[in-house]
Length: 369
Image 1: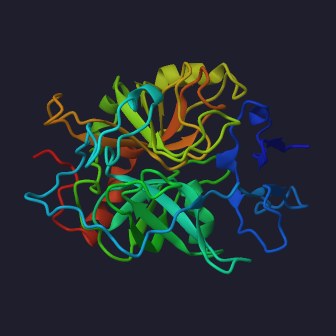
Image 2: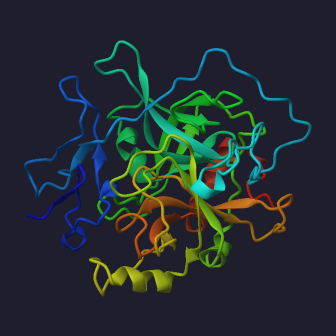
């Protein structure tokens, strides 16, 4: 037997990775629920283990998101253009006391955060929005996420995705301003993405219409390829998402944040070799590491952004900008001793750049000014 099953998820043919503390979410392919399925999660797999297409498939627990109300409260007009990477430390329109202690983001604090949703109509009289993955706004037309989140959608198995911006409380309409939904027009998976090994785990989503920036919706800045090494040694980076608070925990309704350091490749490899990955494990250059020692992203955070303070701006709250350094990819359990593994965004800048120039020419996505 060369597969393992963990918390509803059947995964990988890597025997070294099979064990109760392994997060297998990244090793599966999503399938749409059928009308005959029960509401509980169900795992299915192909009968042929030798067929290259016989990957395990799952139906994840459905998290229904509230629909955008028909009456939109418009945010105030902008007096000046919104720069990329500007974090609203005090929130937008309202500030919640005590949020930092429970690692809860302020409303609008991370305006680049995207909830990727699937409109589910199967067996329902009214469609509902089901959470798929986290993602991040990188320009007016483009959203980045992990390829493992959208690989099956790109194949056309079902293509009813939308990007929600301005989301904060997923289960209640408690925000000062309503969210904005944008249909995904096309998905571009990195041509060298390898689902079994999760290598080159990055995808671009092209939105049907450009995003209009506001005080609570704006893009993250992007790094240059040359800054790859520098961003692997930053002390105070931030991961955001609606994922679980522990391996067997519940999905979060309010956006959470975790402050973590990035980890140099050599240190990360050393720590991961002490796990079931074994002493010969080598970290592929398409990955970067962060966290460890009890702090990390978790299930449901896939595709969510890891952002770090820009190397080109000041450190005070008014001038600091954040740069997209990683996307949540995989890890050994949740919040364990080994670091979490993220998509290495600086490594992919040569691949990303042509899309940025095609869809949003002239846009300052570096934010150096």
